[in-house]
Image 1 (tube, rainbow, N blue to C red):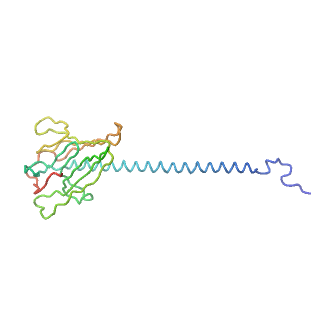
Image 2: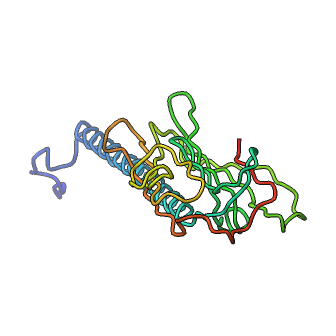
Image 3: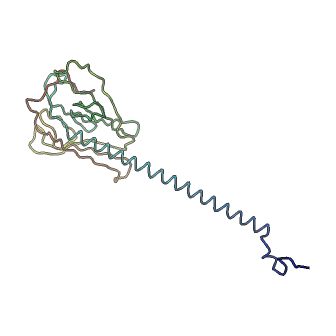
Length: 229
């Protein structure tokens, strides 16, 4: 009579016991949970990094747009409500208004009366772009359009404009919180933005109007252009 294939072998070598099988399955389950948990964590980290990268890219694009528009400010003149002609550039710590060409993809192209305004909402600030077509007396066929508004930055902890140049009452160039010169543009415009509470959260944008200087007599005179309210 032939002896069985497992005859003479220790009991452990004949196969797995039920307890060993349960332990092995438990270990496999724990490993799968850890594996999928790691994958989910990796996916969340990736999404967070991608979102922050997109946010940083958007902020960089907006910063370049702001500097480009300020650098292309035109030293044109307009007649406000008081009737006295003045330069189409007005600025204070919370807003700046000027005339510059707007990209066609943003507002149809051409010269526009632009405003960069810091709007306070609860404990935060927003930077809002407002714009309308700059119309001279030669463009009477165009009906006035309402000013359009676009939010550029949201949830800012703080923000401010300031200006560098020699005002009309002084020959000494200096930084000032407002610019109200009726004849020339500032040499520099600075916008400081703070996204958080730390001092390292400040971002500084510095633009130098390329066509700075006094307004020339040959600049086109608008028929009915006023400072936005």
